[in-house]
Image (cartoon, rainbow, N blue to C red; front, side, top):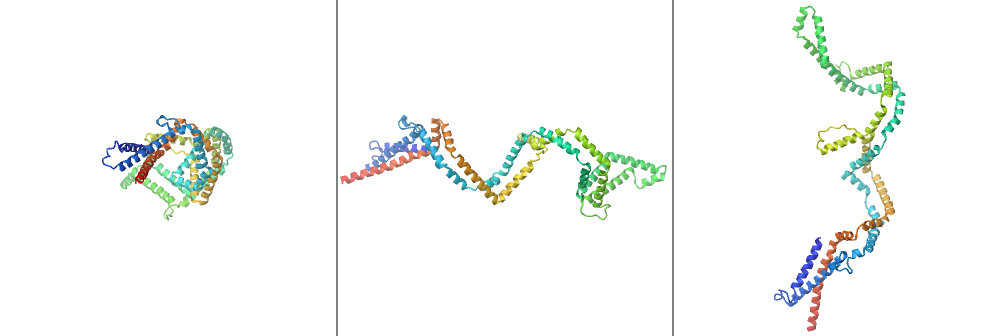
Length: 453
């Protein structure tokens, strides 16, 4: 307590000054006139008396100064009356309903909310809160019961599916030029890799050797001609590979390019048209539709649809896999191994949509003065209703908090908060006492001087 140290120091200085300036004891008696010495002595004595009186008064609020119990420990002895006064002041003056409402109305709650979003990471905190709530709600879902109730509907609808309609819809999508180009490009890439595989290359090499032997037969001339023009088995296979690569690469380039090459064997449009005709020929085949219908029956009768639906709901509704991954990631961060683990992202189906919705609503709110004004009025009206409704509970809350404190705890609680400020009374007492002492001495000396004259 800095002020307490100052007040005590001032009191000690006053007492020491009063002692050292006593005419009978002062070492300054030969250096100063009796008037100056008396003036200082009266000032120090008055300052000491003022400081002691105020020390007693301040201490008497909380304790028994010098062990005197009469009219001391004011806070403890008048606890009930003081508490009632504090409660009355806080609830009816400091925290009156009118004051609280006026303070609320002086603020723009929309600006406060925007500042929270923009400067205090409010966007992510709001999204995290909503996600936590939805995870909690989803965790209570009985996915097994839901799966059992859904399964008969899925099976029934699956049996009612028209194979022809589905096949036609798939063909319609796949035969669109942009989709056809991507599918054909992928197919040609696969064909190219298959053709270059070791098994195909070995088979091609054997076939070339067989054809070569059949061609040469017993003719030494043919063998000599082939040797002269360097048409070995390896050379022939290399030529075939180069031509196949060239044709496939040219076709892929044609499919991926918007520029029509006049030298191309087939345009991208023609390739896509042939692909469409190919798909339609397959889908119009009775065998394809028969296969699809048989597949539906196998799916309905031999597939654990309940278990599959339950697992899907657990992963994509409850987000169990996502939560497990998050736990693994959190543990990896603690172990400082997060940089080496690889986790599959399995987010609940609703998470991205909810986060995007929240982000959109926040941006709309920030851009819209109309929404901000509505929000501000709504919050203030709501708070005014709440304050008026529950303001009467404030005295009870304050009483409850104060009643929970013992006399000693209450004294310590108040003293810790105001005692340092009360020490200014002691400082002012010493100063004022000293000034009054000087003035009284001057007044007395003036009267004495006048009467002697």
